[in-house]
Picture 1: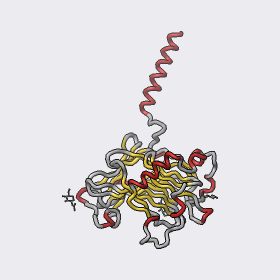
Picture 2: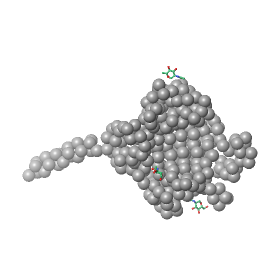
Picture 3: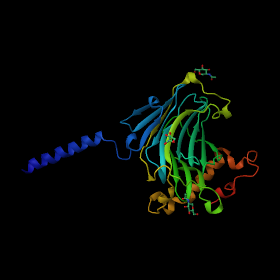
Picture 4: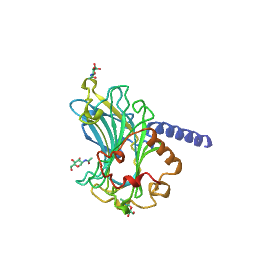
Length: 292
Ligand SMILES: *[C@@H]1O[C@H](CO)[C@@H](O)[C@H](O)[C@H]1NC(C)=O
Ligand SMILES: *[C@@H]1O[C@H](CO)[C@@H](O)[C@H](O)[C@H]1NC(C)=O
Ligand SMILES: *[C@@H]1O[C@H](CO)[C@@H](O)[C@H](O)[C@H]1NC(C)=O
């Protein structure tokens, strides 16, 4: 009797080991759980039990996907490998958008380049339909060689963009001082598209179609966000009980701030807040953003 039980327990453990080998780890849900293809379906392919997606672009189409739900706050992320070799004109985008007429939007845009020349990472922020808040940096690694984690923290206190653990941009909630702040539910979107009119050398370097198809890979389809239907206000997502709204996420800590200032000093190539030709009167947030 005892030996039968022992064998049963061994058998059960073997079944558990075998079945766990077949399932996707819970921190890497399959694409379909939270996302759906929204553009260029025949230019999208799936790898590793749909825990990785490849977007491709050629002269006939680019491609993209979007979260099925909208979110009103959260700490969003995507692991991305940018197209390699000659990718001039090619834009890889990972962003949040409310998709409304006066839209809120938070953008990561990787601007491709000729082989051997650095990829620019541009960020932008739209509030109530108003954008024109571009910042650009070079990265301290080759984003075409490996996956890196690109993250957007959005809570009632700040929007912060991170590359892996390093903050590269902060946009504080300064509504009390008259600056607009994203307040509408947003969906998470990723796409690969032709931006040859503007993306590389201000549009002078065009996409070299003989290098097509261009491909980018995406992983990490878990979502840490507060669900809020597209078209709704984000106001139901401000609870301090949500971990990304907790005190430690309301501003950068001192080591994050040191890392952030270092990025601004060493890697920033453009900041709308320094562009006095474009803005003879700088936008109001410029004087308020980069102080703690
Ligand atoms: C945005 O809205 C348009 C028009 O309503 C729709 O066709 C499109 O699929 C929406 N995009 C996303 C990402 O939901
Ligand atoms: C921005 O902060 C104000 C308080 O200053 C708050 O009332 C508002 O809800 C915040 N906005 C968002 C979208 O969280
Ligand atoms: C486009 O790519 C082809 C194939 O590698 C190369 O021969 C050609 O010089 C490239 N054109 C430009 C304008 O860089």
